[in-house]
Image (cartoon, rainbow, N blue to C red; front, side, top):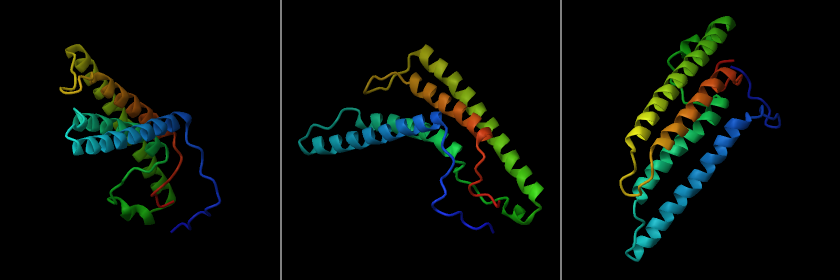
Length: 166
C-alpha cells in the first residue's frame, strides 16, 4: 500500500475550464438554496414560489453537469472495487488497466455528449419548455453536452491516480 502523501504538498492545479464549471456549480447550488429558502418562507404566508419544484429540478441537473468536469479532472469518480484483485498484479498491468479505464471513460463521456447534443437539437426544434416556469429546456441539454465533452477530454488528460493502487 502506498503511503499517504504529506498534507503540505500541493495538488496539481485544476484546468481552467474545470474551475469555471466548478464556479458555475457553486452559483447553482447557492441559487438552489435561495429558491428552497424563499419557497419555504413564502409558504408560511400562503404564497409559495410558483414552479419552485420544477426550478429546483432544473438547477439540480445543472449542478450535476457543472460538477462533472472538476470531478473528472481530479479523477475522483465513484468506482466499484470490481478489479481490486489486480492491486497485487505487476506494475505494468495496473498501469495498463488505469489507462484502459481512462480511455473507456473518455469514450463513454464522448458518446453521452454526442447523444445529449442530439437531444438538445430535438428539444430546440420542438420548442420544449418547462410547464410552470416557461423556461426553454434545450440549453440545459446543451450545457450538459458541453460538460460531458470537456469531461471526455479531461478523462484522457488527467494524470492523477485517486483510488488506484499506485
